[in-house]
Length: 398
Ligand code: RFL
Ligand code: PHB
Image (cartoon, helix red, strand yellow):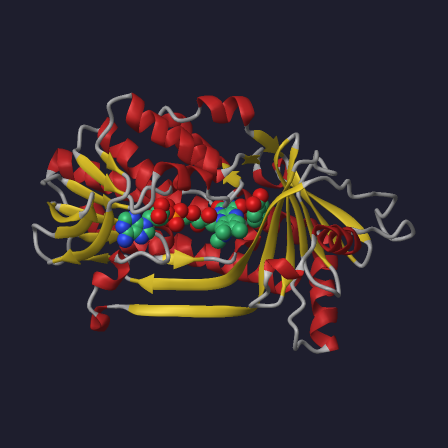
C-alpha cells in the first residue's frame, strides 16, 4: 500500500488531520488499532476552546456541535466554602468555550470520513513500527485482518496518543523528554442526572480537588482527586456522591457562599486516570511528525489536551498543504518549534491550575495556605482573574 501521508491513530488528532488533508486534495490513510465502537465510546475530554470550535466548523464538522454544544462564558472556583465566578468574555474580548464531548467530536469526524467518501480509515489496524523515519519514503509496518502489511508514505503523522509506537521510532540520542508525575489521580464518573450548575465548578478542598462538569443538559460528568493506584471498586456510588457533596459544598456565611446542593442520580461509568505532564522534543524526526498526546500530555485540570492536539494538527496540515502547493519546506521545518511554544504554555497553565487546586498528600500546612492565597488573588484581582480566563479560553493560534 502507498499513500502520501500515513496517519497512525483515529483519535481527534488523526481524524482531523485526515479531514484537512482530504479537503486540500492530499491523499492519506488512517490506521487505527481499535474498532469503531471502542473509539466512539471512549470517555475523555469535554471542553473545546473557541479556536477548536472554529477549526471544526471550517472543515465542515460543526453542524451537530453547533446544535448540541453548550457555550460557556465562565467557570466557578470554590475554596474555603467560598464561590467565585471567572467571567471569560469580559476578560478576553468576547471569547468563550464550548462543552461538547470528545466522543461526539470523534463520531462526527468518523461519520464525515466514511459517509463523504473520505480517505481510507482502517479499524483494527495496529501499527507495529515506523521504519526509515528519516528517509523520503518512511514505512509503517502494521497488523490488519490477521496479517502484517506495509504502508509506504512520503510523510508519517504519529497521532497515536501517549501509548502509541510512533514516538519510539525516533532514535534515543535525537530526543529529549521532560516529565512530571503527580502524586494523585482523578476518579471520573458519568451520571444520568442534570448538572447541578450552569457552568463548570473547580473546587479546592482540604480533602482534595473536585470538578463538576457536564456532557449535556441531562448528563453530569464529575471528578474527584484520589490517591494513585485507587481501585474504582473501593468507591461505591453513595461514597462518591457523599465525597463530591462535601468537597463541592459551600458555606452560607462565606463570600459568595449562599446555598447549593448537589443533585444525585444513577452513575453509569466510573474510571481512574493518573495525572501526567510529559513533552518529547522535537516533535519531528525526518519524515515523521508527532501530533497530540503522542508528543505531549498535560494533566486534565486546564482542559487543554484535546485542544493542543487540534492546534498541532492545524499547524501540521497548514505546513503539508503549503509544501504540496509550493514545494517549500519552510513551514514543515518550523513545525516542531511552532507547536512546542504553545505546548509549553499549556504545560505551564495546566501545572499552575493543578498545583493550585490539588492538596498533595505530603504537603505542608504552609503550602496549603499558599494554594488558598493564589485562589483568593484570582477572586479579588481583575488582572489575576483575566490571566486565568485568557489561558482557559485558549491562547491565540500563531
Ligand atoms: P488519542 O485520543 O489518545 O488518540 C490516539 C489514537 O491512536 C490509537 N492508537 C493506535 N492506532 C494504531 N496503531 C497503534 N499502534 C496505536 N496506538 C494507539 C488509539 O487507539 C487512539 O484511537 O490522542 P489524540 O488524538 O492526540 O487526542 C488527545 C486527546 O484525546 C487528549 O489530549 C484529551 O482527551 C485530554 N483530556 C482533555 N483535553 C481537553 O482538551 N479538554 C478536556 O476537558 C480534557 N479532559 C482529558 C480530559 C483526558 C482525560 N483522560 C482520560 C486522560 C479528561 C480525562 C479524564
Ligand atoms: C470534562 O468535562 O471531562 C472536563 C472538563 C474540564 C476539565 C477536565 C475535564 O478541566
